[in-house]
Image (cartoon, rainbow, N blue to C red):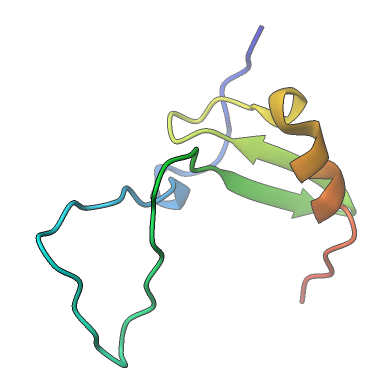
Length: 75
């Protein structure tokens, strides 16, 4: 059973855009997307919550990812 996220919609993962050829620009950061799942991680006081692009909490489906992020220190 999934729960609905309380994250604002502006934090949704970016979607990949199909192009004919890559371009290079020092003002942009690029990520190749071959296949996979995009998510947003929220870390509060060492607790990690992973959200799908639809705002569903998916932490239990990606326990290894959530545990790996528990040690991330923020500002």
